[in-house]
Image (cartoon, rainbow, N blue to C red; front, side):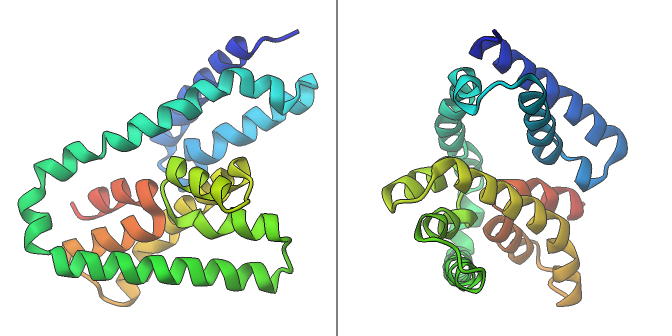
Length: 197
């Protein structure tokens, strides 16, 4: 029987392998956010290990998401002057992006005739993972499903965002950062940094 801690170690190794593949290829579809879950799902199916057994070790990674989110305060503090200077634009961009994300999630859920539980799991998809999972749990969703939707949103936003920004000729660095950060949260932020250089 494979223990939770062994599975945690396998997850970390798979992530490091996926990161190396992504670094070498540079292709978004090779992102560790895509490859790692797919490989882990494959391992669980091949070995017959249940998700509950896997999560006995995996919950340690989930628990680390909250302090990692708090660590975002460091770059915010370092860039406080820029944030203060563009506070109105940033607030308007984040607010409008959030409203559109929630409304589009609800419309998509209605169009797909999803159950109430899945709707509640989908609605917080544009929030960073630990916060989205907490919101999902408090409104009757399934946090693990919400995490999948968050990752898909981030990956799709990162892949499509730069093209959309070019299409609408959005060149301002602040506008690009707010757009990608709001649409693709933590996944989109580094994409903006690399595309702005």
